[in-house]
Length: 298
Image (cartoon, rainbow, N blue to C red):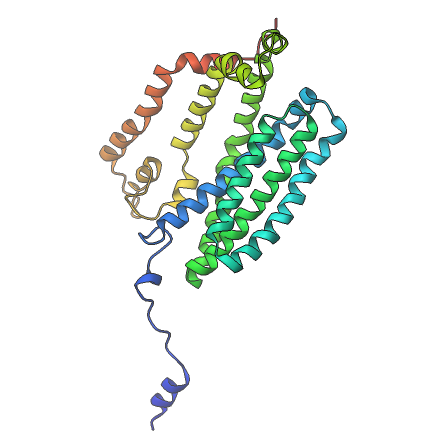
């Protein structure tokens, strides 16, 4: 036996990846999983950052300043319970059931907290949110371990980490604007409607929502403009030309040889600014009303 043959017997050549393991995170068989996990984590991150921003306003409106710390402590305690419970359920029944249960609990807690008439009810809603917010990432890690090959798991963890980038950039500003608008809109007419016998639901749908509608539309437009022009998040998450956004496509016109394709680049730039300009033109009334709501007193 030659030396080359002995070396080949000792050192094993790793087998080539099969078809299921060869694709990336955004391949056809993994696109739904990646997109679902990223959107879910982004939703939870947006809520967490928004609550931190508007809690001073909420505490002033609901009273019960002694329970201010419990709003965050209840969320963290529920988070621990959700992580432990969801991990155990995922081992027994698979990730689908605890993942859906976590989303339901998170949505229920969000609804209770949003409609809370007192600080104590808000603390209870935050506890439910914490259980759901703890269950979802725990099950997500289980899904990553079961569904992705080993070489894609670190990349997926990095993608989930970037899901906090966009909420961190625009979440606090949007939540502060909406809180300021809601604070200014809850005027004497809303309190008079409650005194006249209207329920909270009737007051919200017939009195408060028509007043704050310009601010809600303005917040949606601001989120759209920030998302449309976002570059780093789109560059990290898109790996195929079909999934790339316009800012990423425009940056692709700069080749490695530093040759600038000015014609296509300028044409793509014009096309990229048309949707924001049209949105701002048709919804400028809501933008102005939403931006000025709460700025002028009296």
